[in-house]
Image (cartoon, rainbow, N blue to C red; front, top):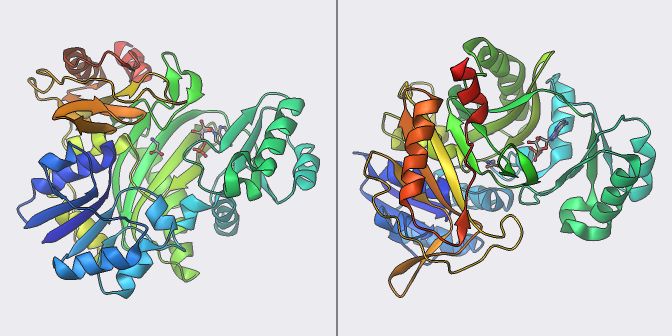
Length: 422
Ligand code: AMP
Ligand code: GLY
């Protein structure tokens, strides 16, 4: 098969690395890619917002499957344009991608389908939103409705803070994403992620993970896209996974199909494990970054038929994951998640010597040398018999990397390492 992979982050490097190992692959193309992806694929100059150009490329190179990594092209309807042109796609339609693209859409769907999630109110003006605050207790959870690159959620401890945040959201602080704001009940519990693949009807559980969203050790500081992750997440026991499937994933897929928006691709559920059971925090319509890196590291079978089956029928697919734990540490450029320092030199040294894998997230080549070009720069990934061993191996690899203008967390996996110590 000829495959076109769209995206340029660590998630896409992990997908490219796994796709390139497939015996079913004839040729892998990627756009815009990065220097890590370039080792696995031919980089082509394609702009994913130019649907016509992507369709023309697929015809010219006889592309059998387009794999869309990030959310923006999904919410922009690229899957619909490709499907209309007869090109199979891994990724949901624009209507189905509303599960990520609109928090209010997802909350209303949960309400219709009886899916456990935080109580909420959708508001479309500052006045309504301020009035609605009276119905909630602090801390107040405020969410810009649309895509905001992971930055659209504010948890305000006090009423004045909540009012300021609402004024910012409705004042355009998050662009058009803040034209509507969802106010939610605050849920208490541990967070975990669950992945499921679907063709719109059949559903295939595809593993669990936990990530570390805050920038600093001990989970302090501002939220980021994710500073590290591991898979599987032992807190998501087989019993809890069965509940997540029955109470959250299955009703979602069924309702989307019944309402004429069948969902095809990966559903990435962010969950809160509350005293009452698992509740949905949010959906993403794509693999997580860096959760994808740890899933791909553990996947012990061919990825191509799995992604292809989401477009053609997934019933007979049986993914095989290694029993090992994979853990990834994100090395970011100083300044992230604010303005990251660009251009810092990187030397990977012998980081991969002990079976670790360094996925490129925000790198570029400058005069033939590897430099930082984004906030999250590398995702250094290793496996082990448990989180403790995977963590030790990942940090051994991190310590072999020279990246003076970078930083990373030293405690990825801390919850599970503490539990493993007992
Ligand atoms: P989201 O972008 O919706 O995943 O939210 C970002 C983060 O905010 C989540 O990972 C949670 O840590 C937190 N969060 C979101 N919604 C809630 C909620 N209703 N209760 C408690 N924490 C929440
Ligand atoms: N790591 C969280 C995400 O990809 O949204």
